Length: 450
Image 1 (cartoon, one colour):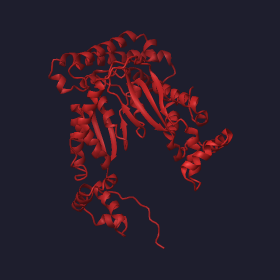
Image 2: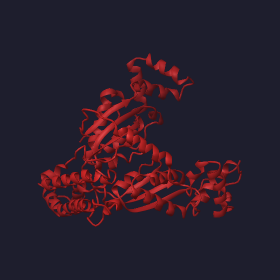
Image 3: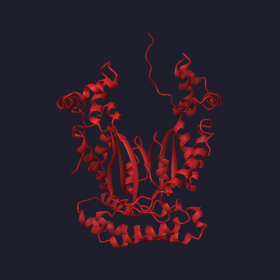
Image 4: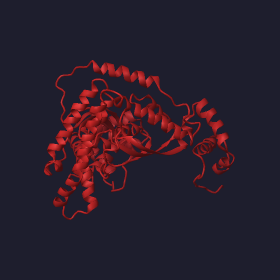
């Protein structure tokens, strides 16, 4: 019997690693021996034949890249992060101060009649942000006399981030495999905003130095472009009366028989019966019998445990209207299915409680109104670029579908007292809506309302 071996392949280019792993399906040799026989040229030829020629794209998942993306707009980070199978870490608006020298200026605006209104508005907002920083810190020092300087700075950032326009420049670290990156680049190259197209081109250029074969055929995608344009046109013809802009969460779709379905899938794994028969059996069970099975699946969950994978069969869809700052955190739950609307000023804005308490509400509202006026002026001709001038305080819609496993994670993480109040409220509302309809499922959800 051969000895078990588990080891890391280190010091190899990503494309070589991808080939080494791919070859194991047909080669009896060990991974390190396969890798030793490879070089960049052999790997390139392999990928040209099998990944590009025959479409065996899963091979590209073994080529992993870590990309440093600097000085891109906050708006751009949300486009970049709209890729499910990747990892991101972003410069935080809650812990770092921003300044007026660093915000994105779309060339289409700076070379147009809107250059003045765009830059004047952005400068006004950023000047207000900078001016209020020491004043907010002074107020917080009186309110929290025992707090350390770093804590006061963080709380000041947390309040004043609502002023930041999405044009503010930030940094993002991205780790992604070549297969996911390929589609991510295609989406960027096809995006209607020039900044996204340029970022796509620059990411491709940087990635080609590491994976010269796996992403070299990425290009503008006609399907994405034409489909977007036609759906935008169709949406523009709609006229719906009575639309509401109430901040918060609506549970718009869900498994009506979620508890029966959950019991059936829990039993399915350990039985030999088809799902349909199991579900019929579950329907005939007494309420107490169903609850006992659900309790057995949930009652042992500890602090660091993850719910069973069977939880993923149960789905909920929420329509959320929240400030853009909260959206930045909610969107990070990329395993969920998300559809977010373009940013606009039409849904109003949120005001941090301490902005009011400190007496800065007048200056805050002045920024919001100035941004609103500039947005409508620019949006007449450049609706997409007009998004850059909108502060994070303004509200945005997101449709998000998550399974029960994701919901457990989301509510536990986002309701925690260390989180921001704007997304804590979202977690609280989600919990309340689910508990109202499915109290047995909600029984073991961790929702921190303190």
